[in-house]
Image 1 (cartoon, rainbow, N blue to C red):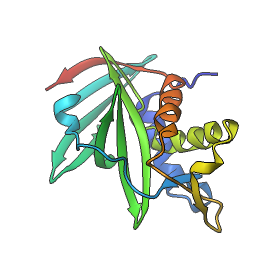
Image 2: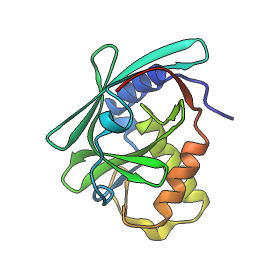
Image 3: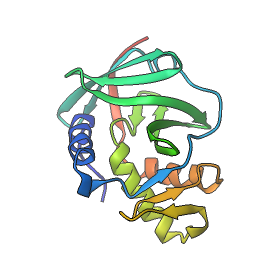
Length: 178
């Protein structure tokens, strides 16, 4: 079943769930994905307006001191961190503590964008794919809250993120400012 929510709905849900301890993400990474840092405001634009069904949402992109910021139309920060590019995917790395990083993917293809505002949802999808593919060898440790720390160096990560993005709905970009 494909998710039919907009960026705005997913962003609000992710923010709400991340603020609750019992809804902690099931996986995190020990370090960000290696690679050259990407300025998302140059690659995607400084502002996009997307449409999903009958809903629209706006996202603003800025880049300061090697850090990307994505802010929604309510001026809420939905992402702060670094980004790298792997083939067709942008991998966004958000630092949540020492040796603790959340990574999620975004794909920009023509006038479609997939993955913005879905960080928390993607961590759950990652865990599901990792378990179904029996990729226990990429798990480095598990804490007392059952949050698994995963190696960000493993080749399987690219394939998992590609599967995640392929299973998320794409939003149509109806306005874009460079």
